[in-house]
Image (cartoon, rainbow over all chains, first blue to last red; front, side):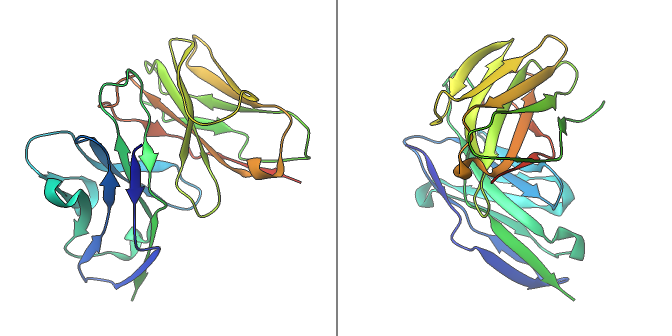
Amino acid sequence: AQSVTQPDIHITVSEGASLELRCNYSYGATPYLFWYVQSPGQGLQLLLKYFSGDTLVQGIKGFEAEFKRSQSSFNLRKPSVHWSDAAEYFCAVGPMNTGFQKLVFGTGTRLLVSP
Amino acid sequence: ETGVTQSPTHLIKTRGQQVTLRCSSQSGHNTVSWYQQALGQGPQFIFQYYREEENGRGNFPPRFSGLQFPNYSSELNVNALELDDSALYLCASSPTSVNADTQYFGPGTRLTVL
């Protein structure tokens, strides 16, 4: 069965500092990979997704993620964090060829941004 | 293009009752999925509807059921509510039913079961 591990429950980063959120997945093949962000009172917003090809994926709001097959990882990065980036971040995997959409989410990482 | 909307925002029910949650998908999206997000957890897939038929289900009992209508609206029904059903319920719509396509999430309905 697919699973996603986000080992960091909380991360605090100073505004302007760089950010890396970790994500490891377990799946028999390369799945579709996603990062979503959830702000209070908001739904999940897609930051970026990886299906195939270039392993470095660019997303919205200056985020990027790198797929590393050998490590089963899909870590999210941002070079300079803004206070508005404080939110909950979820990594998710979606299996291929099931005929329907089903995302398996990690437990999330809450990002706190200090001034 | 309007986003995905859900109603109500919050709901309080007692154990054993039944509840209906509503979702309005983006126009043209013929796929809707429902997720349950317990406090401190990531969302868990309940089921998906494609062109008004359930075409995929997660590990949820039959008392969780749904409907999808031609006007891009859908419902999640939960019978015989249990305390553990307290959660944020998210719906997500997509233009297609394949996993490669982006799902657009609504803001959710917070259900509290007392």
